[in-house]
Image (tube, rainbow, N blue to C red; front, side, top):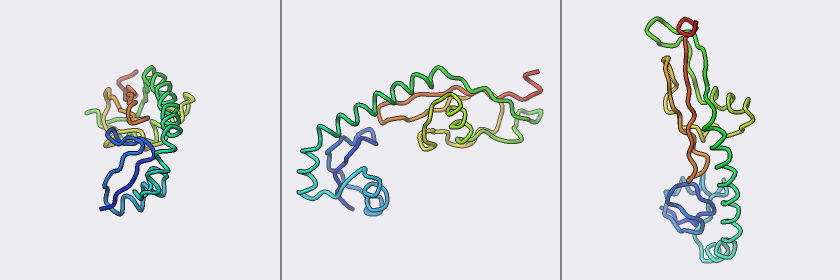
Length: 152
């Protein structure tokens, strides 16, 4: 286990500047290379304490952008026609890529990792998909999957 100092909020309970214990591989392969944390040495802890105000301001800006984006997403509804069998089972499916491309068509650019779809949607019906834009900002997108037979 390795101790690291967190540089940005990315889990609900990890605040900027907090020292947390994580698995070695998670620290080496994800947190540190992506600029989300630094090893918890005395020098790094002091450096982050001096930069904490700047990091907090950056996080507040990121959070306000996420809130604006969330309000836009909450107003949208994705309605898609996909060929389906009689029992409502789709011949294709709706994936995270489809959701991200729908949002980009509506001038909302997000990363695929923000969309919490779980499994692909494989039946007709109405769904709600959560989108995590920031640890404190979560929105949802309503999706309706229609079969060309049922919508006609």
